[in-house]
Image (cartoon, rainbow, N blue to C red):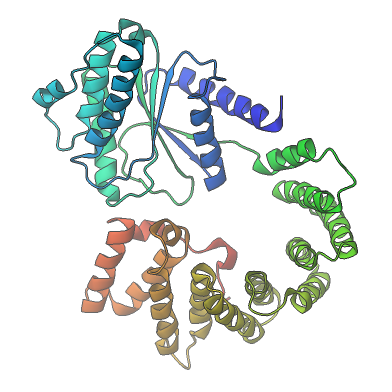
Amino acid sequence: MNPIQLELFKIDKQWQQVIRKHSSENLFIGLGERHEVNLFEAYFKYQLTEESKTNDMFLLHYQEFKSPDDYGKSLVKEWQEIFQLWQKDTGAGMIWDVDQADRLKKYDTDAYLPITALAQLCKLYPELKFKKIYIQLAPTTIHNIEALSQWINECSSCITALQQDNIKLVYTDHHVHRTLKKLKQGTEFRLNIDVSQLMQNAAAHSNRDKSDPESDYQQQILVASNYLSKGKHEQANAVLERAIMIAQKQGLHEAVVAARIMLAQSLAVKNKKNEARQQYELALAQAGENTLLSAHIHMSYGSFLLAHSGKDEAKKYFEKAVKIAEIIPNDFIAMECTRLLGQLSENKLSGSAKAMEYYLKCLAIAKKMPLEKRRQSSMAYTALIMLKKYGEESPEGRKLDLEMQDDFGADWKTAADIPKNHANPLS
């Protein structure tokens, strides 16, 4: 069994435990980091392959969510197309009447359509009643968050009303940056996937030729990442020093820099300020000008200086990071560093005028980013700072509130958490 198969086996074991424990539930919400969510989706995809030994049905849907009035139709349309092709291949000649679902409409959305259609399918094939039908909803784009929440809530209610106990809805979300916060029903479960260990095992499995220096370097980085994720900094530091030596011997300059940044951050966590500063300086000297790596180093070094030195020195590195990010370009780094510069500009003598210039620029940069990226950034936090300065009932405040509701929903203020990496830059 290779590492990927092993991880899929672990996911399957966890999933089976969840559904056994909540056998009467019809909505399951898996929470995790983005990579964990992606692996869970990979597990669903695997159930659709010939290698899978499942007796249940797994349906995974990436359709864009545009409107609650036609999302259900898009699911049923895809199912019907597949059904018709299957009928053509088998020559069975069965007719799946999905249109009669219209006569049962009693909901505000078309969420009833997929459930009534599947209920009809179960009548055509009674053996389906003894199988679980898992529908994972993973829309690539969500145009209206509240409408999707309403759609899923109604879909779950329809399953209960029609007593279709074998039909289960599945939705995955980020465990911190939740997209859907208004799901009234459902069982939430945390995805537990050790991605660092998975990557390390996969690298070891594929790198049978231990004489390849570049593969050896990658293996060291994965091992170090695994140690760091578990808080084992001393072990990680030793592995990172070995990675630096391997990269230096092979003239892999970017690899050297990347390992030094990891080492500097690890040293900083253990309060080894001088050693961490030395690693940052060495990394900066080797990173080159106007590169993504250079932008990351300036941002990381600025954060380090903010925590261990002074605001003025940190500010220089954030300003440089913004300039590099604008050239590359990288909107996320430009936005986060601009937000930090705004917070560092606030003081009792100069007031907040300069800071507001930075905050306005910060939101302008954020609006250029994809919606999902905005939700993962400190955009909501920055907007909340601005709203407090404008006053919620001021014309500027009301306008900003409406803009944020469009992107984050009516309860956007609850998403305005203090960024963990720079929780209090003014202290």
